[in-house]
Amino acid sequence: MRLSVIAVLAVVTCWLAGAAHAQDGVNVNTANQQSLLNIAQSAGHSAQPSNIGGDGVPGIEVRTQDGITFYAVGTACEQGGCRGIKLMARHQPAGTVSYGKINTINREMSPLKLWYTPEVVILERYLILDGGVSPAHLAFEMRIFPTYVSLVTEQLNQAEGSSQAQ
Image (cartoon, rainbow, N blue to C red; front, side, top):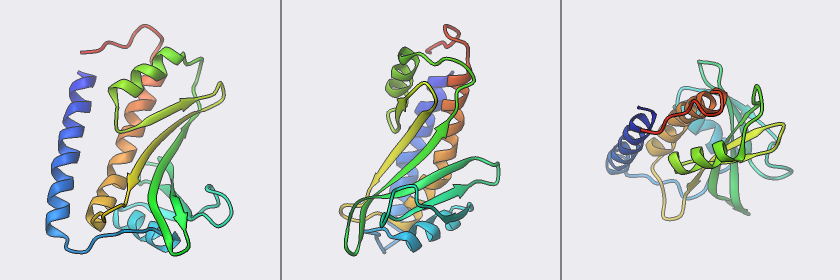
């Protein structure tokens, strides 16, 4: 069932991305602090500037209406803006998480990248702006990312051995 949900999310993401791109004639080629804030707000989230990416790198802390917190950080930055955006969330596991579980989630949820230390699991999704991406698609990505965070959190909180691939 979980794989079915993931597959449906992937298909819907691709379909809506194409529709959003087709109807929005203006493309975003670079991101800065203000554009990250605008994208998060257009996705219906509250956002505030954050230094999560380090000095001089645009970054914001985003909070959904459901209370999920994640970050958007510029990547491949040069003067004039960043050519990519990294969406990132942190999960503090309730217990031990095996590398096998992390690898399984990485395989099953290919839009994400997970990495793990004993203290935290980091979920990341990269948005590449090369060639331009519509503002509607970027807002969609910020709306869907918390769904991925919830699905991964649910899988990580399951007891080892109880996860069933379908």
